[in-house]
Structure formats: C-alpha cells, structure tokens
Length: 166
Image (cartoon, rainbow, N blue to C red; front, side):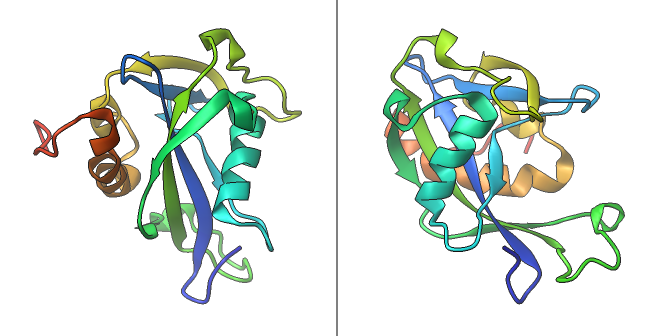
C-alpha cells in the first residue's frame, strides 16, 4: 500500500541467532546485493501479519520458529533514488516506510529455506556480526538500517554507540 505521501508500507526483518548474529541474505540476480528480508504490507494487513507472511515467503520460517524480541516504535522512511522511481505508476511510489522487527530463531539453521516461493527473493544467506550490514547495504537504505539497528540493539545487550566509519 502506498500512502498519500508516496511511501509504500513495508516490514523489515532482523533475524538473530543465539550468538547475536544476524541473517544477511543475497538477492536473486542482485550481483552480490545483500539485505535483510523485507516486504510490503498488503491492504487490510497489519504489520505483524505482514511480518509472518514475509518471514515465510522469503526465508521459509513459520511463526512458531521465531520469537519477536522487539520492534521499532514508529515508521522509518527512505526515499528511492530517481532511477528506481517508476514513472507513470499510480499512485507514485517515492520510497518506503518500514516497521522493523527483531526476531530470534528458535529452530536449527536448517529451518531457513529460501526456495519455498515460486519467485525466491534470495539465493543465499549467512550469519553476520550485528553491525556488519550497516556498511554493506545499498547506500540509499543505510540511514534506515542505522536507525533500526540502533533502536533494536538493546534486547541483544548491545550498547548504543557510534558505528566505526559512520
């Protein structure tokens, strides 16, 4: 759903393991483009409902395979670079507003399955240190990642601090 300001409603998913590492996934055909799982919120769908739908569609995990540790208090927004804005699209989407969730995996790593969807989003994944994604994600998403990661670090016992190089 795209709001009156042109932002598409979306959920972002940070999945952690017992070592406080995060699942970092490689986009299909993305020429080494990596990101956290995320996806749009459909009409008449709550962010929580979208979270569990996207969790299953993108990484094959059911609701009972995870525990929700935290979520961002409000919406975090990013604008798309002009080259990514689809001209002529109605309504016009200029970016995304995201509600982020931090989840803990309760299952074995083998529960993660990227190929349950007819059009998989990802073709690979790995566990990475908590702050690693901040310098790896595409530049236009970096501020939203920083905001989400800073806000959601506390449940993992992380201290809010300035990330080296940022």
